[in-house]
Image: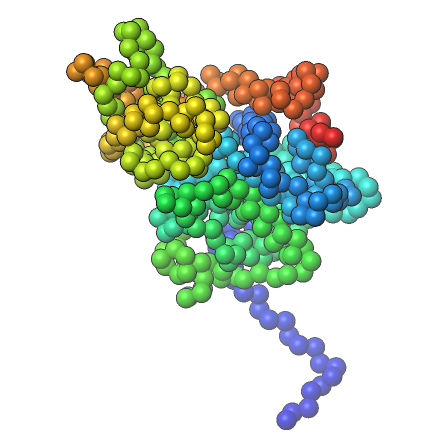
Length: 497
């Protein structure tokens, strides 16, 4: 055996070439300057709307039972504060709490393409880390290069997380291989949080690679016969994992250069049928500028225009002296994604998760009660126990219009059209009613802004007194003042003792 020269220094190994998909993402996060006024303005509305959705979820015990520390009574010094609660947690659990609240009622923003998802889910990780880092550094710490984040920093991180999740979704269908879209939340959150924590671009590559090899959630819990409440906290779980992976890399854990492309063991071969990702456009600020708001109804987004259409038809029925009791059947001319995700005409409605992902149930509820609210999905609610809703939903059928499907994928349109034709018991067929772009669409953005703020104000109301509600709404309306505010001081406005 050869003698080792104890004074010899081993030559460093050549750095492995990372998959370009990982390299491009890390470069975007570290080097791209967001200079789009439209993106920042839209991000402000997304930020307020998302926080409001999280507060609304606190009214539902099925959500709140999952929140708080693992060990009851634990408070983390300088930890993440959870809006609407008294909890102060470590950033990993804080990301889960905020992420679960945000997604619980399916009322935050939406992105529809080859893959679907809700890019504002990433705020769970972004806000948790921004708040924790800021509080720690204010107390003398040196996290993330000692920075105290402004709300504008949070908005910029949201723009980049939106962009990563949305651009990956444009041409790549994860649902078609059985994976849930929260994989994109985990990857996007990992990418932006790594920079917030002060990691280098190389460490960001490492963290992103860790996110791709982390066991991915399947869509099992979103589809009959296994539909259940996990779909409401899956994004929180993704935020939690993203922060945890970044912290591991911050402590020295490495990455995997070919996490996507490695033969046999990489993401592509294991999870994507050997197919590589396709990209329609480089990363910029396109997704935030074009994101969809859920303004009117807490409903899966492919149903939004169908519900709006039903509301319009209700007015016609009322003018005729008719009601839902007079409807024989309804045909919904729609796009392919609606049929694939929420066409559940004859499937049983066993729980909240079944009802809020069934276009027939949502449309029938609008016809019968002229409303659709989150409480209409709960077991034992007026809508859930209505014999007329149950009968009518089984008489609502969906048919695909290929042009609607094409427009849905057209990057210049991105419409989510539904068209309802109602036939009455007396044989009368009403003229088809069509809505192509929902109120939260970019084409109707200015129309939607007052409604988004009104929705935010409604969600604040049950939690805070009039003075605090006014303070928060006024702050939200003042872009400059909001963006210049330290994020921990802003979050303090949402704390409840």
